[in-house]
Image (tube, rainbow, N blue to C red; front, side, top):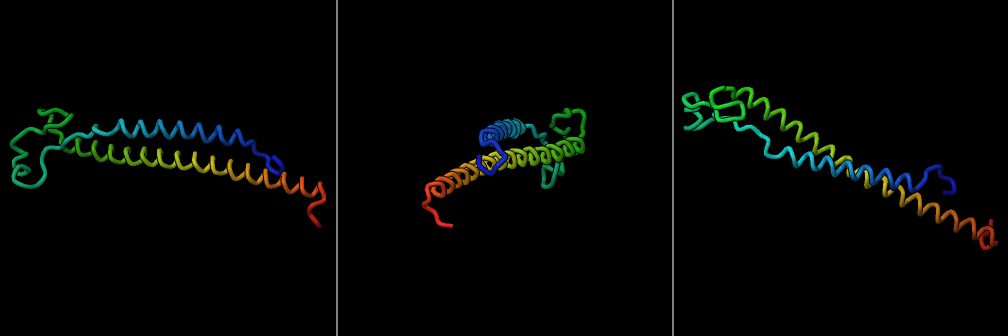
Amino acid sequence: MIGFETDLQDLRDSAGALQDAAGAAETASSGLRGTDVPVAGGGGFLGGLAGMFPADNAFGRSLGMPAVAAAYNDHLAKIQKLVAQLHQTTADTSHALMRVAELYEQADEDSKRHVNRAAAGLEGN
């Protein structure tokens, strides 16, 4: 490229690799769905009876660890949010690199046309 020290194919390759990484992050985000741990209890009529019935969650009906289940769910929600952000920012970066490659390519073509016209004496200085 005239005037640029960036190889367009490198930009495109980087954008493709980032798009692959975004796909992996999206897959990871999808994989996190459904891994929540229901916490027995809460408000309302049945919530008031929660102490009478064992917690039905991944920590066992007889373990009775609703605080642990709630902490797990809180942590999971934060991880899901971060993985979703990773997917979005990686995809955005991939698109941005592709756009940069397009802009560099257009600038390179414009520069070559300008040089060719100047060499042909069609442009006055």
